[in-house]
Image (cartoon, rainbow, N blue to C red; front, side):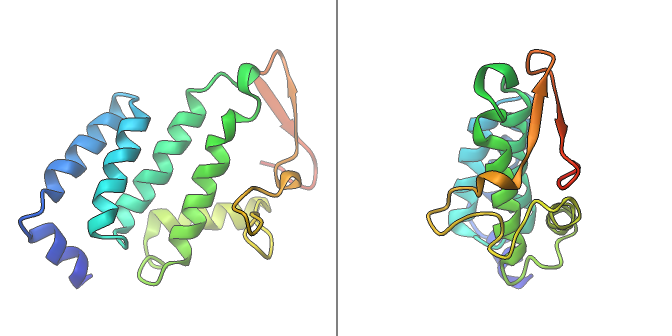
Length: 148
């Protein structure tokens, strides 16, 4: 939108921060990427590309966390889902293709509830993601109600 373009064209170092964040993602430095995306969002909280990338940084952290050691991705998978849900609820982001694809996946897989799968304190509803770990945490099997 106009606000996004104004931020991107201002003296603010949007392009440099976005490029650094994207490079951090490519290099598997997900914490650095998330910090840079958060910095960008302080200036433009409705930037759908950055909101999507920030959530993806948590998914990257989930994918790089040993499942067997920390359980279900040390909470990073759930945090990514929560960030995508929050982004999809923002006015101005409801048309962002990548954000809405993730929100639609949440609906299709049944990982959201009437309160978005999260309680008022921000904690996840524990029964939203039901799975059984097997093969020393190298794979998991979901139940019939939540077939991911």
